[in-house]
Length: 270
Image (spheres, rainbow, N blue to C red):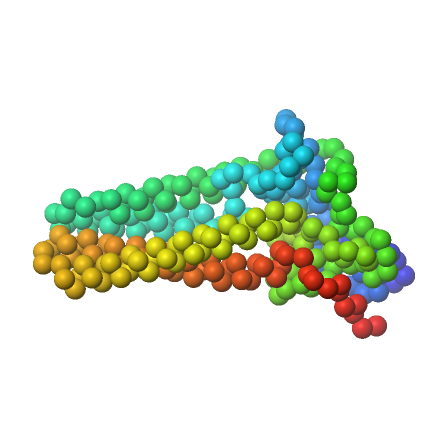
C-alpha cells in the first residue's frame, strides 16, 4: 500500500486504523462522527477536546487550558466507588447503632464521599452525552502541532509506554497521546502529575497515622466505645493507605505516558 500516513478503513465497519506510511499500526479509532480535535462547545464559548465519539473533560477557556470540574477520564470509576463508599458508610452507621455508640462521624463521612462520587459519575455521563460538534475543528498555534501533522520523515505514532503512544511530527513530539481511550491532549500533564503525587503522599501519610492510631486505641482502650472508635479509625486508615498506594502506582505509570520523551523515537526496522 503506497499511501501517506493517516487514518484509513480498518476493514471493520465504523473503525479506522492508522497507517504510518510503511505499515499498519495497532492504533484504531471510531470512524463515526467528527474527527478528534478542538471544537467549539455548542451553546458556549469554550473549546473542548472531542475524542471522535464523545466530549472529554479537556477544555480551552480564554486561551488557557483546563479540565471540566467534577468529571473523570474513566466513567466507570465513580459508579464503582460511589456505591462502595455508601455501603461502607451504611455499615459503619449500622455498627454504631447496634453498639449504642454516638460516634457516627466516620459513617457520615463515607456516605458523603459516596454521594460525591455518584455526582461526579452523573456529571461525566452528561458531558459525554452532549451533542457532537457541528463546526470545523480549531487548529490555531495554541494547539499545534496536531496529530497527523508532518514536519519531516518518520512522522507517526510511537510507543512511549505500555499504556500508549505519542505523535512525532518528524521533528518534534506533540502534546497528544493515543491510548485505549483514544487520542488525548497532555498540555496539563505536569500539573496533573504534581497533584497526583501530592495526593498520593497525603493519603498514604494520613493512612499510616490513622492505622497506627487505631492499633493503639485497640491495644490500650478500656471501654467498648473506645474499642469501636479504634476499629473505625483503623478501617479508615487502611482505606487511606490503599488509596495512597494506588495513587503512587498510578502516578508512576502515568509519568512515562504524559511527560515528553527526552529523545527522538527510534524508527521501526524496515
